[in-house]
Image 1 (cartoon, rainbow, N blue to C red):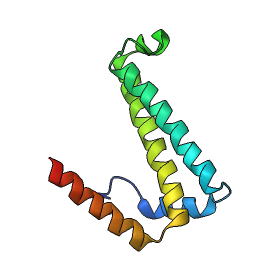
Image 2: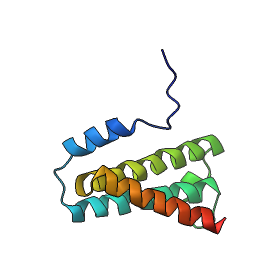
Image 3: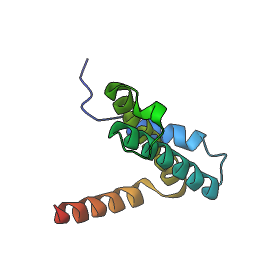
Length: 107
């Protein structure tokens, strides 16, 4: 069996996104924002920021770190759900590569 070297199964994400097409674009964007808020809370707890809730700040670093990963993946999944239901693969790939080039130019 060949080892999968991809970070995640993009084809599975596409299939699930196409099946999960009940929400309007507006609601998909709101869902992304909800997930970004949860990621923000998790990241603040991970760095033990003074403004995050004390119950999260007092958890173990491992728990907070895993929550950052979980919420980050939720942001990615929610964003893919929007993109795969609105744009073609070609449009997504072209823009993603354009944004990668822009990022590379900044570092």
